[in-house]
Image 1 (cartoon, helix red, strand yellow):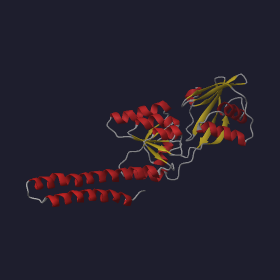
Image 2 (cartoon, rainbow, N blue to C red; image 1 turned 135 degrees about the horizontal axis):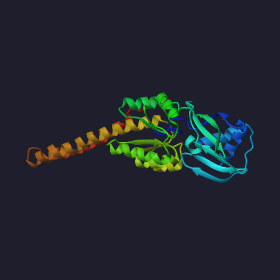
Image 3 (cartoon, helix red, strand yellow; image 1 turned 180 degrees about the horizontal axis):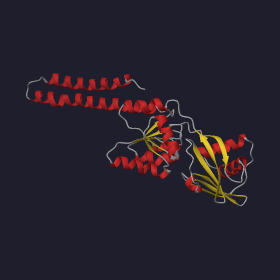
Image 4 (cartoon, rainbow, N blue to C red; image 1 turned 30 degrees about the vertical axis):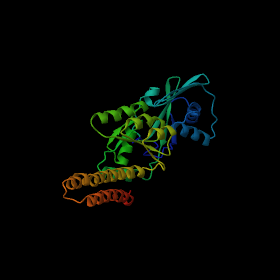
Length: 295
């Protein structure tokens, strides 16, 4: 599972801007929002929304550069502003808060950070528990810091967590699972998830996500709820069971009836009737899928 927008609502909200240098919190928010105003990343949108609510005017920028999965830099009034991960701005991250944090640097000096919170989807925990009960291992991939990822993992009931994962690394992680003989289904919603959805044995895209994610997925959950992942698993298991049953009924005629008819031990009319009956049984058995109890 991708985290943001998949296990969580993906609508990040700023809860605090903290200044650690000579700039005030509002000044840092103005700089960060100015740099992030053109970005479509959930954190960037949250910063701009927060600045708009506080009626903070944005400043024109130049030389905007985006480093996927790390951050954005730009020139604002001749100052180089970086907004992104601790690694991107070269910050010493010692705080242990279980929140998503974006750092701000001005002319290579870390001047503060912004804290965010993201709400969990209402059906996430129930869906994860049901999948685990069905013997499916649940793994989370996220670009969040380890402290944040582990905190969410505890809430979700997911012990296998890959944190601080760059967008291009998700497909590689899935490939490593596959190399160990695992069959992998990837659930995601964003542009960054597209390569991983393609790499997985089964790509499950949320219909509430990006177009490229939906095009990359083998299965699209139109409503975007995680209960759909459970329903997919249940229906897949039931379908595979019916396939095996139908193969039995389709071949039982060929294995038994044809040799008996060939040896003259079974009247040809009876053999023909048995063949028709096997076909009818296959159709009837397949229709029983309609009664499958879904999550």
